[in-house]
Image (tube, rainbow, N blue to C red; front, side, top):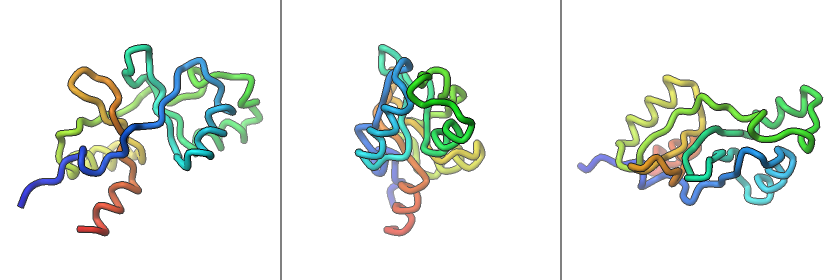
Length: 128
């Protein structure tokens, strides 16, 4: 039996934004697209941060105006990534070890090509 790789269940293309964009604008776009996270990228499409719906809730709960700040100021920068050719089990283990629910997927040049979420993993397990 072949091992399932991340490329078989990752969401691609991934929803991305640049550091200077405002969280309020991005939240509107996330809602419209039906996604719960965005990967913040640099000019070469390398991931430099991530913002999730939970991050946005924390931002607004703190009283910060989401239109008066930038993603750069609000994003999580200590991100963990995976590769499309990795076994799903390795990525699931990494997500559990790091207590994260969104994992950007990068190619051999470090460019963002997709994302794996706990929802993707659950769907994969349910169809197995």
